[in-house]
Image 1 (cartoon, rainbow, N blue to C red):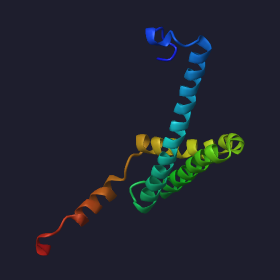
Image 2 (tube, one colour):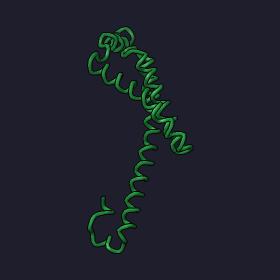
Image 3 (cartoon, helix red, strand yellow):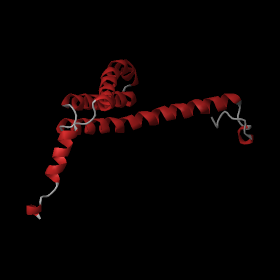
Image 4 (cartoon, one colour):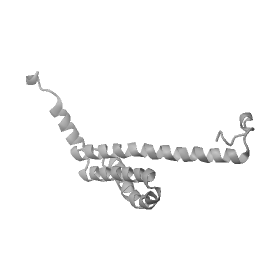
Length: 132
C-alpha cells in the first residue's frame, strides 16, 4: 500500500508506474508465500510421520498429513517449474490437503489425544528407583 499512498516521495512517479510497482509487490508476495508453503509441506510430512509412529492419534491422520505434505510440495514446486501444469494440478491436490488438515483439527477438537497412552508412555520414560 505504500506504493499507492499519497506521499511526497512518490510524486516523481507516474500513476501507471506506481500501479506497476504495486502489482510487482503483490507478485513477489505471492512467490514468497509459495516458497513458505514448500517449508510447510516438509513440516506436514514430518508431522504426519510423527503422528503415524506415535499412538496418541489415529495412524490414518498421520498418513493423510503426509499425503497433504506431498501435495503441498508437488503443487508449489510445480508452480515454479511448470506454472501452467500447476494451475491444472492445484484444484485436484487441494482436496487431500483440505481433508487432512480438517481431519486433524476436528479430531483434536472432538476427541483429543489418547491421554491414557500418553501417561503410560510418560511413566515408562521415568527412571525407577532401581535404575538410579
